[in-house]
Image (cartoon, rainbow, N blue to C red; front, side):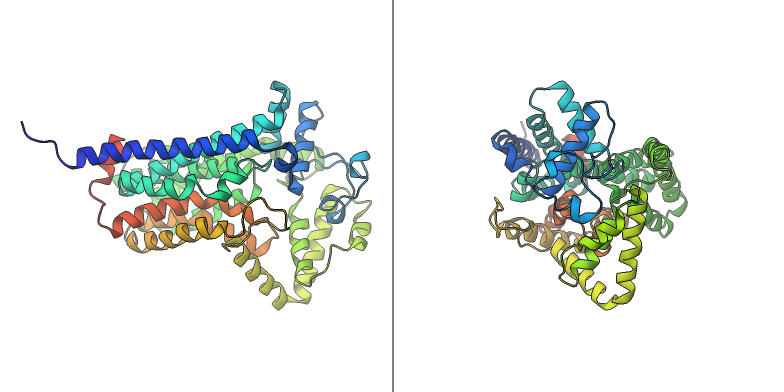
Length: 434
């Protein structure tokens, strides 16, 4: 009786190790979610807004943030009387409804809503690990999937933010799903399948899910369309892009219609102007001025957004060089391995980024070089990180958003490392076997 091929036990070992890593990564997230105190889980400023909107939806009042004053000075830095009652008009489109909907469902169905949300986030983190493993295994075999999961499973920031009341982990899962579905679409186009557009539509659905948590995800339709227009199989790629864009628009239509009824304009969020204005003030090292908040008083929600947008454009026009310098600093902070949060009470050691971002980024660069002939795949995996970088160059956004696109970089890193060491034999066969 002949001995089985050497690749068979190796594949079995890789599958077992892969399953163990995903399970341990999920366990780490669940353990922290169950251990995290309520005050620590809601330590970020945006957490209070999400919780307030979620409670409003659970009470039947709809997705609205009870009034806390006009402008960034009141909403970003509420005073000691913020909890005593509304100070200004309610806001109906400050945040996207995805995360508040999750909080509202937890409030309606469980007696421990915050703990339930954190557990759901832990599960989302585990599912994202599985999608990253699948994508890397499809590109370069099971061992590549093992490397990708190893880069993500015990990333201290990813584990920590899965236990905070912010939508980082759900957005990461949605973008990981879009990444995996996009790879299926590219494979279908390259094989000449007539159903490639189905995968394109499914990718649009995953991007829509991400957009219901973070509005910047909507903008992904632009670089994806540009990439499709310059691809070799232009017509087929554009057909898939059109299907995905149509699904994205249909999915976002209810929120746009609701905001048109409530606010008079089909807008996704009224936070854009504030973020842009906040960034232009930071360039001069000034606090958010109270006179701007007073000027915004009396304006409705859309009026305030337009007011801060115009103020930001004025600041940018007055000092374009300084603004460009600030944009570069924001991008540097987004991809810095140093502390990801401001303040001295961070629960993670400042060196944590050096143990997570640096290995993933370095291996991702290796992956870009080693897989350079698979242009469509490499471009697809880089689109979300590059688009997020552009968003942070323009808006003052929280650096933890980089965690949402890390699965794509981990997939590149896993596939690149296996290509580097010559372990790319029959990746698709191994992926199917798994």
